[in-house]
Length: 481
Image (cartoon, rainbow, N blue to C red; front, side, top):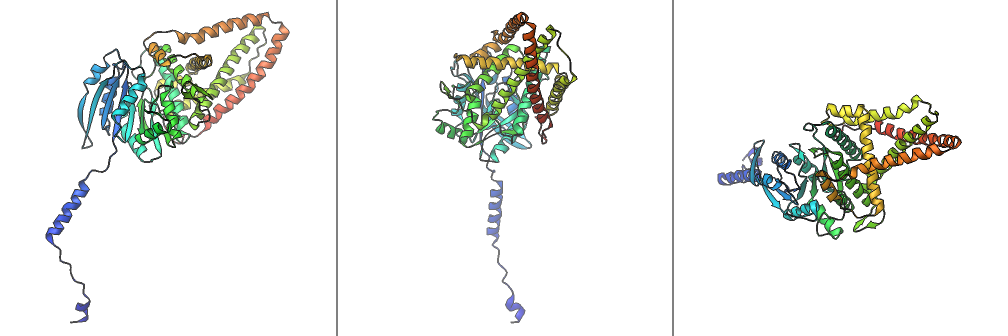
């Protein structure tokens, strides 16, 4: 045998049966479905006959369907159950050639003293085996890929306990001057709030229940840490803010999505907007204030409340500068001591530029948003509306009077109650009293008050203007709200 043959490697003999089996096995493995976490969706609904159909249409049109959808109807007096029941049952949807399956269940739990909180907890008990909980309000619709984007974001990092969508309000179906004005103001308010959270590392202070996804593991840990039988508790006026704080305290992150978007139901009347905003502000104050009222413990140093403190200090400055300006202006004119200076135009112009930049940051901005920003007067009027909500909320809190703000909001949305007029009536009465007192003062005293008041207002306005300018110059890093 020559050297070449001696070093040749033996050729392996391939068994055709084994090879065929190996190929078949490989094909079976490749054909196995990849792991997909399960998403249980809860839709608490209270008198949502006008919107529940659109909400369910939106969920069934998602590129990633929730694995199950539970509509939990509570305390309703309209046709919400009837309309939602038309969607009950299994649904098969083909998306990009892939068949998806979900099932819609409708639960009418009747009179429920815990209102939305009770509906959410009832829904939670139905999906405890899922990986994620998707909470959707009965008047909120989302972009077609919102669920897919929220799932991808929360599944990408086990430290995330919940992610909120980017909220706005659809203004294309709003008619009437007052509703359009209020919706434009709410859109600007949402946009500014969303951008603030995004520029803070996308850390979301409040995982709004309108359209947010939660880790079920995080919710279970919250229940253990807080000694709760359910994730949501009825003690707070802002159940979503409290849960967000608890998730953060359990060691998880609370985030705002970089992409997922949802349109929420806006308030189209002053009465309804007042009740909603007072409830939100009152609940936030309860969480911020040291000590404990009832079962709600104030957590003034909680990281999720830093933005709340900033918002409240900002509103105090807004109240102070505006009230002082009008008082001093009237007082100066009354004794012919007012001298106009062009420098007073700087703050309004910076405010206009800041409002315009906020409007331009909106992904779905319309001409109404631009007019609201550059017109100055609409934004200024809306600020006075917000000041009324702010004062009413702090007054309620200071009175220590127990009020069911959920019931107040429900009554306002039905068109009942005139509490929203209280700030205006009090302001008119206070103005009349100050005018009377002012006219009784000697000229020397009047001059002294003006000599002290204008510099104080000037310094305060300079600080406020510099703060607005810093906000105006901040990079948005490509974020759209």
